[in-house]
Length: 261
Image (cartoon, rainbow, N blue to C red):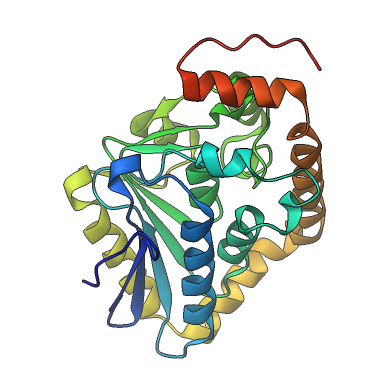
């Protein structure tokens, strides 16, 4: 498998007609830096246009999917710049892929990592997977679907709890709620997701793309409008004193002191 580098921290492996896209920053729990997100978007878009690719597996490997945004990088993005930053673009690329995308999730799947998984078509969870949207703990909200994409899978109650409390759930609760579609031993999560992607890829590719388009068509327009609104709301919050305090507290490993400013 091709090795990642600090400048290109995403691995790409074409396993027959399935493209495996792996986030590979294990030392920082696969945190989503701008470089990761830029390379991720490029891998998905190139594969979506490549007739040799029929399906994707999106993963962080068998230990950790992604613990979320690289807060050091996020802290440097100004509110006006956020909507056009790599932080917003990569999630859109995953959601917009015409070809089926299966997420293989083990370990932490938090914040932006959870939103990446939610943008896929099917989620295969390893038994160590932990899902959550902890953004509220640092004074912001999810900005790539975390206030919207739980609900179609889990219903509005679990969506509200995820966004308003930041509570984490394990793989088995995720399966019970409908967030995850399968649970397997984490050591086999990439293999299981690849087998599922291969099963899908063996079907007629035009029909698979059409089925995906039909399934998402009913809510695409209102959801895309709501996703754009979510990004705008987060952009405003990035300029707040609470967001600055929350990020500082997280990096300094202390409790934040929010004052509503």
